[in-house]
Amino acid sequence: MINRDTGYVFRWADFEFAPGAIAALRRLTVAGFPLIVITNQSGVARGYYTEQDVQTLTQQMTAYLASQGVTITATYYCPHHTSGTIAEYARACDCRKPGPALLLQAASAHDLSLGDSIMIGDKESDIKAARAAGVGIAYLIDAKHSSHVIPPSAPNGVFADLAACVDYFLA
Image 1 (cartoon, helix red, strand yellow):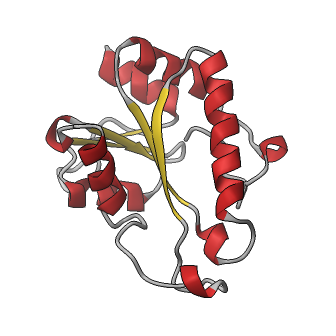
Image 2 (cartoon, rainbow, N blue to C red; image 1 turned 90 degrees about the horizontal axis):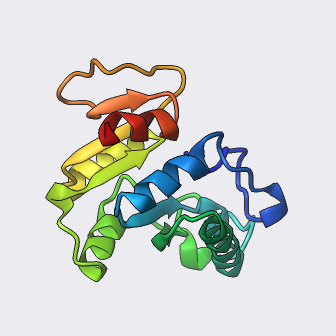
Image 3 (cartoon, one colour; image 1 turned 60 degrees about the horizontal axis):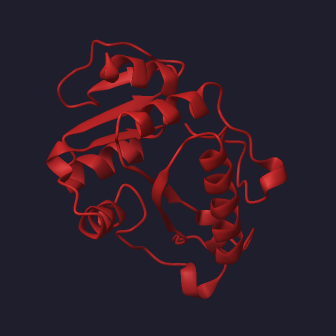
């Protein structure tokens, strides 16, 4: 939802922000929301790139966003995957979404009330992680199925993009 998912992006040259994402993140920054990125990075376990590559890309993204008036409070990532080819990362864990560990870690480190927090994700695993961690509101970005009428067991809302989601809950 911050960037286009073109599959295992780990180089800044290949990173592409989703349309409207920077402006939406800036609005959240101005509104005073701490922005914490939680991401699965199975490319590490699969041997496509290293943890250092993830950290470098994260630093580049964060610096660019800062130059655009966006403050990323923190980024947490899971390098694991059960079908990984790198032994130290090829395992099941609860930091990989839909596990809640990274959300719980972020809440503890930044003194956040998860019940008062909002999770915006672009995969069902994001919503499941939010529910498992006790996050109060979970929104899904899904351009194909956007609607404001959502059954209670699903996300609190489904939006075409981050900008539409931010428009909805900042209104």
